Length: 107
Image (cartoon, rainbow, N blue to C red):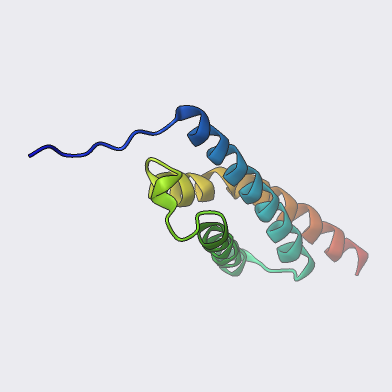
């Protein structure tokens, strides 16, 4: 009995990763702006980020992955969830702090 191996095109995998990264980058910056405008602080701000990025990843999974994300990524859990959250925290914090400071200084 032979196991069927899945073959992936590395060019397609890299293109999929770039598209996902772009969506996550924009989402984290928008989430940072919203968190700053609503003047979220401390744990509430980080929970907002995790919830927002989770919703973004779920939308990507449903809309772009058509419910079968394994066809488009070799290791979907690592590539979509873990690296997406860890890689976008700095951008989120930057926008969150910047907009928060602008909102607080104007009031």
